Each structure stands twice: as structure tokens, then as C-alpha cells.
Length: 498
Image 1 (cartoon, rainbow, N blue to C red):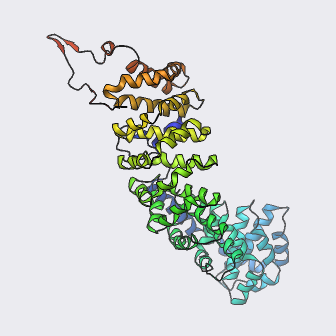
Image 2 (cartoon, one colour; image 1 turned 60 degrees about the horizontal axis):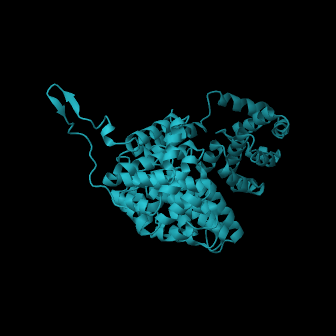
């Protein structure tokens, strides 16, 4: 069985129409249809939330007639008895949901407000949070003095905190309250930095969710604000802004296109050379996510002269930056031949190969993908250039690693190089043999992974088993009238020169 992780990554590359398109790697994304279905399900659930069920009218009547508010408040404050506490807060919410004169003032006077606000902080009990938020919303929807009471009780910051809730129901409810628009109204020059940092922090947490992603309308509201905040001089605000963009671009091609259409990409690219590593890291992730998209979306990044920043990024003292830079380039080499050529013209092949040989293992892994992708999508001249730059020895060295996925990637890359070598195949075989690559490939015929074993065996059989005359696949077929040659036999065209 093939390593499922390997197949998953292979299936996520770009250029699905090409040979071995399973080698195209791209982040897993939910299809548009699934996202629509998920969204419709979510909307249906939301639509159901405020509807009072058939027994609610009776319950409300009973609560209004019989409930003892003092007892209700005491039960709502019973932290040591979660089921009783939830039932009490739910009863308060039902009272406040009544269409016939909800007893808002009576409940405020009972002292329940601070208890409901405290329930908003119970991240261990999302149902309690949800009921408390609903009850407080009903109070706040009353008269101005009643609204002020909710504000004075400290509910507003906690409502904003719920935007960061890991529980989707709570976050969705706060978004439905319309909190995004007034939140963005605070982004003004005169707003104190400390407050603006809090606003940006809320925005980045709104963008963080992937399953499901933020509603499209919310993204459309946030992007103009992010376009403005990306110019801010405060490092904390800038870092949060760029991470927000990275989260949005990690949500599939539709969200990538929304970010591109907002016009923020040309402002994002220069941040790849920002003096603060925190900003560089976030910017590299954001543009890296964009180039996991279509060739057209990738080209938008390249058109902003992104590759000019990569000589420095590929030699950065921070291993994480080097790894992310090579990961970025692995998605460019998975693109079309013009994009592969852009990497070559920018002089980046020697630096990728240096990371392949000298980087930490995670960086070497990304470099292996970058090389292997080039051998698939590149033309024979581009592959020849790769070999001329000295890729064979460090590439073959990775065959000794313990990571089955990396071994498969390297074997595929070697196989692809041999396929396009044409008349130079013998010279390439010699290069592989001289760096002990052949010994490593032979040893892999005993590997536990069946895919690795097969690939190693095929390479040995096809290219290292002696005279081509011995290859039964190339021998003429014997028929009654004598030998006939298969006209479909693939004879290599002119190969490349090293």
C-alpha cells in the first residue's frame, strides 16, 4: 500500500492535466460545492436557533406565572452544578424571548446581569455561553437604559472574545449579531494603539477558522480593513494583519481570489524583506498560500517581483524561514514551464540545491519536492540545467533517510530525469552510480513499502540492468510471418546535454 500521506500531498499539487499529475502538491481544500453545502447546513442551523419550539409558549407562561426570580438567579450562579446552572440560564433566556412584554427590568433588578456576563467566560461550557449570550442580547435589544446596563456589566469585551471561540455556534451567533461592522468602525487614526491592537486581534481570530471558513460577506467586510492596516507602523498590528491574510489565503482558491481582488498582494510582497522576522514569517506564509492556487493566481505573485526576495530568504539564518521559502518555490516549480523558467532565471536553483544538501531535514524535504516537481513540469532543457547545477549527489543522498514519502519523491524525480535524458541516459546513469546512488536504489528493492520497492526495481530494470537488447519490452514480437516491431514503442527523442 502506498503511504497515504504521500498520496495526499501528491494529489494536492497544481497542473492536473500533466503527466503524473498526482505529483502536484497543494494544500487540501474543500470544493466549492462542499463549502456551499456546509454553509447551507450552517445557515439552516442558525435559522433554527431563535425559533421557539412548540412547547416554549407553555414553558414561558409557566415561567412567568410561577418562577421565583431569586431562586432562578441562585441556580444560574450555581457553578458547582452545571446541569442546574444551564437549565436556569435557559429559563431566563426563555423569559426574555417572550413576545409579550418580556420581564427585562425585573430580571435586571434581580441581579442576574453579572451572572450572565460571567457565563460568557465559561469556555468549557459552550452551551452555557450560547444561552447566556442569547439572554444578554435580548436584554440589550430593549430600551437604551437596558442596553446601557448590559454594556456597564462588561458584556461587550466578552462578546468580542466569543469571536475567538473554538465553538462554532458561539462565534456564528456573535457574527450574526452584526458585530463586525461596528468593530471595523474603530479603525481610525485617532484610535489609541492599544485599542487598535485589540481590534486587529479580534480580526485575525475571525479569519482563523477553516471549517467552516468565515462567511463570504464577513471576508468582504474585513478585506478593506486589512488593506488599510497593512500600512500600519505598529509591529503587533502589522503582524496580526498579515497573519489574518495568511489564514484567508489558506481557505481554498475562492478565498485566494477574494484576497487577490482586494488589491492587497502588491502591498504584501515587499514585507518578504521586512526587518522583523515575525513580519517576514507571516508574509511568507501568506504568499506561499496564494501560490498553492491556480497558475493564474500564482502568476499574480510572480508579477509583483516576488522572486527577487528569495536569494535572501533561502540563505536566512532562521531554519523556519528557509523551509517556508523552499516550500513556496516547490509550488512554483509545480507550475507551468514559464514559471519554472522564472525560478531558473532568478538564479534560485543553486540555492534550492544547497538547501537540499545542507538544510535541516524539514527544509531538505521541501527541496526534494521542489526538484521532483521541476522534473515533471519542466522541459528537457530545464531538467538539464538542474543536473548541470549538481543536483544528483544531494538528491541521491536523501535515499538514505527514514521518511518513506521523501524516498518516493526522490525516486520519482530520478526516474523522471532518466526518462527525458534521451541519448545522454548513459552519462546520467554514470553520475548516479558515481555518487553511490545506484547502491542506494538497489538497497531500496528490499524496502517494506511496496511502492518504493516497485519504483526502485523498475529503475534498476530499465536503466541499470545491462544492455538494452536484453529488455523484453523492446524486443520485436514474433508472429507467423516473422518479427514485427511495435509502431507505438516510445523511442526517446533527442535528449539533453549536460
